[in-house]
Image 1 (cartoon, rainbow, N blue to C red):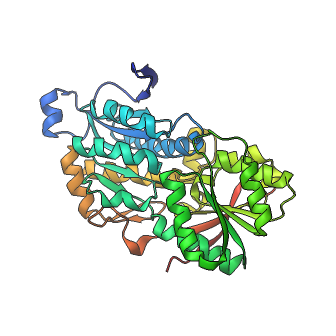
Image 2 (image 1 turned 90 degrees about the vertical axis):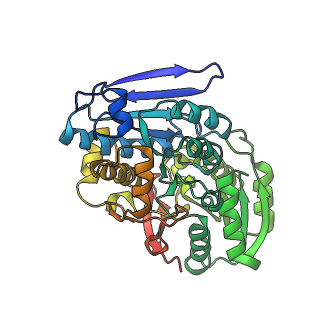
Length: 389
C-alpha cells in the first residue's frame, strides 16, 4: 500500500490511501465499472479528521473502516476494493472542498463518515448531489436526518437519545442537584448540551459558551462561573481537546466537582492534556457499546493490525464498512444500488444490528447509550449502560 498526499490550491488536504490499482476482475474498463458488473474494481472512502484538534476520533474510525476492507480483500483478492481517505481535519471550513474532491472520483461508491456533525452539515449536501451513500459512525446532531438527504445514514443514536441519557446519569447515578452546562458552539456540542439542559430542567444553575476547533486555551471565565455557581457537575458539549484544558483549569481552581460530557470527549487525549489525576472520575457518555465488548475476533484483529486497542467508534466503523461490503457482495455495485440496498438492510455486525428508518436514522429499537469513567491511567472505562427510554 502507498500513501499519496495532495493539496489543492485552496490548501485543503486530501489524503488518498490506495490499496491496489487493479481490480480482482482484470476487466477494469470504465464501462464495466459504470454498469456495476463486478464487485471488484470499486472504491470505498473514509471522510473525516485525520489531522486537527480532534484527529484521534477520526483515526479510530478510519482504522476500523480500513480493517474491514483489508479483511475483505484477503478473501476476494488484494486489489478488490480500493480504500481512499479524505482528511477533512474535522473542520466545517475545509469539509466542502474535501467533499468535492471525493465526489470527483467516480470509482467511489460508498463513504464511511463524516464523523462530526459540523462537517456533516456542509459535506453531506455535496455527497447527496453526487448520489453517493454515506454511513456516519458518530455524527449525532439531530437535524442531520431532517434535510432530505437520500444518501444519509447514521449508525448510532442521535442526541435525542444521548442527551437525555446523560441527564439521567447525572440525576439518578450522580445524584447531582446543581449542574452547570456549557458548549463549544459547534453543531455537535450545542445540540447535545441543549438536550441535556432540557432534560435537567431546574437542576441547571448556569450556562456558558466557549470557542471550538482549538481556538481557545484560556477558559478562566468559564471556570469562575462554574465555581461561583456552586455546581457539583459541569456538563460540557464539545471535544476532548477543549475538555482536557477545562478540566486542568478547574482542578487548578480547586473545584471538586465532576466534569461530564459526550462521545466527543471519550478519548485518552482528554487525560493527556488535563493530567491523569485531574481527569480521573470524568464521565463521558456515548451512543455506543464499549469497543472491547465487540463480537467475533474484532478486538484481537484490530490490535494485530494497528498495534493499538480499538478506540471510540472503531467497531461501529468496522460494521459500517462491512455493511457496504455485504451490499457489494449482493451485486449492489453502483451508488444508487447501494442506496437502495441500505434502505432495506437488516445487518448484524460486531457492535450492533443495523436497520435504518426512511430518514437514515438507526431503528429506535437498536439504540444504546453507555457511560464511561476515566480511570487513574487516563482511559475511559465502561461504567454502565444507560436506559434510553
